[in-house]
Image (cartoon, rainbow, N blue to C red; front, side):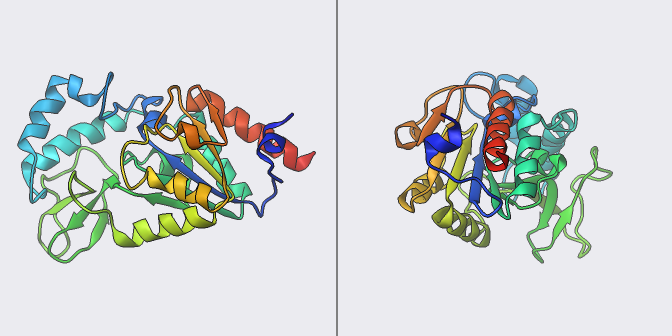
Length: 247
């Protein structure tokens, strides 16, 4: 029995699909995670720089920390899971990728129907006029970088304790409610409100598939839970789903 048959899905371009990704998918590209073994806090330089960063987040010290992170991520490349999601976007007419990651690897892989819940380290935001500016190059020429209005920018990243952009959050919840297939990839499922989105999808009748090396709080609610690395599992899953649609 194939996965589509096991899930009771008829795979076609019209299938409504939502994917939620977390730090695990980026870890496989070499980006340190924020929690547990292998986290960035095991790196003394990261701890030292992070201790100096802080509100209002448009300071030189904050940008020194983010430039360290940006320099690290700039050496990382999207992996096969990132590219599989970009391929799925091109196939499904109603597809949305929701990510908790701020590293920009999904966009680098070609994903465009993308909601970055926590923002992106490759953008700056002005706390004075609200303008958002792309900052694709690292190292930056000046710290902090300046908005055209003359004020220093802050990283366009949701810091701990800050609210997610309500427009982004509303779009994520709306897509989750109408999803027919919901993929949960590389997330520990302990950060809210992202962890609620698969449950909302399931309540709406979606089939939910989890890809993670370890069990998570969401595992008992999944239609299918696959243990393994996203870069290995997701391309195979996508190939099988596509084959079921063509065959």
